[in-house]
Image (cartoon, rainbow over all chains, first blue to last red; front, top):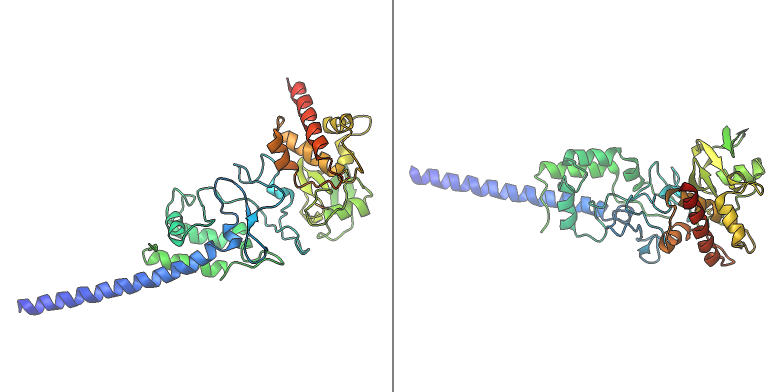
Length: 187
Length: 154
Ligand code: FES
Ligand code: FES
């Protein structure tokens, strides 16, 4: 009797472990999609380090460089120290080819939210860390993706610029799904 | 639509998507701001909106709220703005085409930084192009204007 119980317990834990691994793998696949969005030039070009220099990269540009015209976002990340981003970036995209993109607010992401040239694992750790994600829970991160007008610009960047993959709604759903599965990060 | 330019209220009958520069030049005959590129790449069209610099070629007029100031409203030949006076002192202009934009950008910089070093000047004014290459004189004039502003603040 005792040995039957033991075998049963062993079977159950093997099944649970297999299920957990499956959930973990599915969650990591979901994270991959989120990383695909966050590392896309429409997002990463402005999630830059403390050099405060916006980047020009991706298929819309012949080569990767810092923003032309010697522009810096400064420590304010909105250019107030020298020339405000809003000097050229209006509240909407210019409809002229090579004209400036625009959104109701235009700024670099806070320096803690570094995505430029970061690995999947690094961005994953950052987005889960309230000290580096603007004090948000993952639910709030999903909400931010759904609500923020500058984030939305990533999917409607104006002529001549490749939009970020998926949509704001899909990306927010990915975050919710991944969070529910324990938000695992790749190694 | 109502538009306040250089302290004067104007009624303009235009599409909201028309660039502010078009409205200023073609509707109001305020021709200090110049057309260079039309895509915020040269700075010739720079004006202030509520004291902040803006490329008027790339701002739809429907997005403008508040006071627009052009080079004509910054100062006059008889009552020059400190930046305009420094420009005269250094005889900055060559052909002059880019200069309204240069002066408007410089005046905006000096409002936030009355003691800019070379790097700050280059950061703030590199997006104002000058085909005549007056950059060294622009830099010198910005420093002269900055010194005057600091003196008057003492
Ligand atoms: S005409 Fe506006 S920046 Fe060139
Ligand atoms: S003075 Fe001629 S373009 Fe600047």
